[in-house]
Amino acid sequence: MPLIKAFADEGEDLELIWLAGFAEHPEKGWQVRAITRGIESDRVVVHPLPIGLLSVLPLGQCYSNGDPASLRLHGEIVELLIPNVAHGKEDASACIPPDLFPIKGHERKVQRLLRYQVGGVEVLVPTIELIRCLFVHNKTMANALMRTSGIMDLCRPEIPGIYADLHLQFTDKMPVSVLKPAFVAEFAWTAVHPEGRRSWDSVAALSNGQRHVSFRPPPLENSHWTVRWMREKSTALVLEILHLTGKRHSCDVLRYSHPSMRKAVSFRPKGLMQDHELGSGEPPPVREIRDYVVDDRATGSRIDTHQSVLPVLTKTSSFDRVIEITKVAEAAAQEPAWSPDDDGEGPRSGQGRPTPETVIRRRVRVTASVGEEDAGATLPPIEFHLLEPADPNYLGELEPLIGALHLMAEMLPAVRIAMSLCALKSGRAVSVIGHRRRPCLITVLWPPSCPPLVLMDIDHSGGFSLSSLALRYICPLPFRRMEEQIKTLLDGMVDNHGRWDTDLADNFAGVCECIRLPRVLRNREQMDQKAYWKIWAMRLIERLGLEGLSRASP
Image: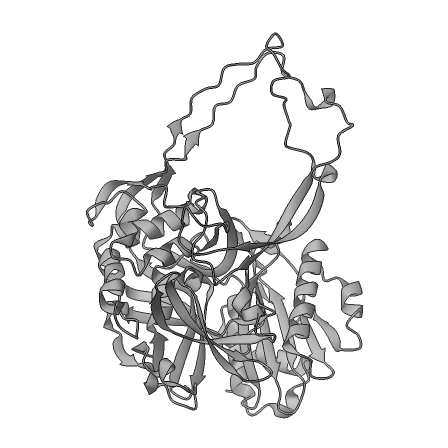
């Protein structure tokens, strides 16, 4: 995730509490008004940010020195069934009960919400959040959102409809580096499916010239959502939509192409020198590991269809069925073969591909832009990859634990609980499950008049086995210190091949106690049974030392 300079300049850790609509700047283009709260000072500030950041701005996200944090201060993860997304009733955000989410300032009261009734609970969904989930999958889609017919600049126009065979021909305006099957399927639904296209077009049509953001939600039936929400009695406010189903493909076969896609031509010229024939006197190459800083003052970014893409675990989306999605590449012109009789050294096999042991890695900070491409801009662009491959079992084996934590919340009414999901650091086998990244659930519990507790658990899908880890803090710590410790432990676990690094845990001995929970009732055969969740919740309360705060079990 990139560091956001405007947030870093505040000089304290922040929580994103609201998105107060879009506004068009005469030089910087479309912006989103992000409202943050200082975690220590409680100071509220409005930040006009490039709309290109919209895809990575979920409500409740915390930032430490401008960096997105793994921890959340508010919100529990729950699953919902929405009978029809189009049937949400629009209302102003001023209707949110003050006990649930106090709204101060006029700019936060004019935004729009959609009301849904789910199981006796009135669910309030910020309109911007639903738009973010449905359409804004990266910077490029965010920049096209408020431009009339902006989506047609990214791909050769197709008449909205349902096709047997659909070929999307992307233009140079679409970075080729974002063209993965999951995104291409979402783009086809947005640009070509009549329901998706009608809903996308309504965002600019209904929001241009308004202080609030509005649109016509698509008629997705029996849509299953995984969300983070805040609930007070019979009313809940959705902060972030993590997973959504109900979309239908716009075709049976989907093909896509891009001007920069070319078939690789493989040939072995006679006389090509091998790696072992090369001299070893040259110094080892240097590989830069880039930490990106988004400059919100930039008016645009350089043109680069192969721009860097940062992977971000934020959401997934499932369609009604699986279809064939194929990349179409044109054949590249073959270069003439080289032989030793030619002038010069010619190509050498393996050049530019040094082994990891011979590479010097250097971390550098790079200022970049998420603005629209401009030939006169100087900052490099960056993109985001948010979509994971569709998986109906999105939460994996974390789902039963989340159910047990909800029961814990009912048994411990005096304890505030917040949940968040994060992805493990890449680079090891433990970091992935099949084709998707392995998620980690981080839960923070605040007992009254006591320092917080943190519970970390990794998805055990694929036969992976690792104990849960609890951090019992001896005294209150600044948010930044807690975030640093959790990140250190998670990264250390990945580097330690999927085992908690006890040496790292010992470094925190004066601040918190690290408690491994190796066998807290993890019976895979009973994980789908609600009665088992209840026993699991009671055992966790006991192991975390919270029995004195527990009321009669639900």
